[in-house]
Amino acid sequence: MIEPRRRLACASFLTSRVLGFLPISEASVKIPDQQNRPFTGANMTPMIDVVFLLIIFFLVSSHLARQEARLPVDLPTAKTHDPLSTAPVSLTVTVDADQRVLVGGRLIGPTELATVFAQVVSEEGESASLRIRTDGAVPYRIIEPVLQAAAKSGLLDVKLAVQEPSPTS
Image 1 (spheres, rainbow, N blue to C red):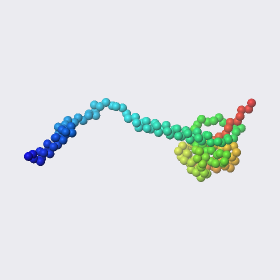
Image 2: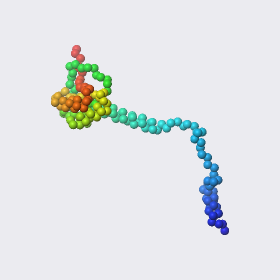
Image 3: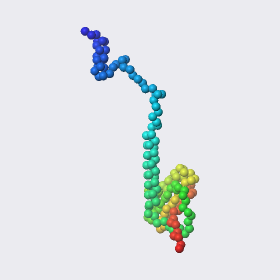
C-alpha cells in the first residue's frame, strides 16, 4: 500500500500529465524581458476619443449659432452703417416680433438676462461682446431692459444688428 503523502504526490503528477501540464517545479517559465521588446508606438485610442469629442462639440455649437441666425426677425434698415466686424460675438440676444427675448433660441426672462450677461463677462472679461437682433416693429421699451442688464453686468461692447441700406441708383 502507498502511504498517504506519496499518494498525493502521485495523484498530482498523474493529473498534470492527463491535463497536459507539468508541476511548477518541473516547468520552465520564461519571463519576457521588457528591455528587449521593441517599442510598439503610442496608444492612439485616447487621442482619437478626444478628437471625436471635439468634433461633436464644434458641430453642436455651430448648429446652435446657425439656429440663432435663422430666427425670423425683420431687422430695421440702417441709414448709415459701419462695415460688419469680423470679430466673433460672445452672445447674441434676439427680440422677435412677439416681443420675446431669446438667447440661444431659448426664451429668457429679464432677471435671467443679468445672470447670463454676468456669466459671459466673467468667462471672457473685457473682450466680451453682445449682438442684439431685434425686429423693426419692436418698441424701444422692450429693448431697453436688455441694454440696462448688459450695462449693469459690465458688458460694454454692444452691437445692434441692422440691414444694410439699399444702394441708391
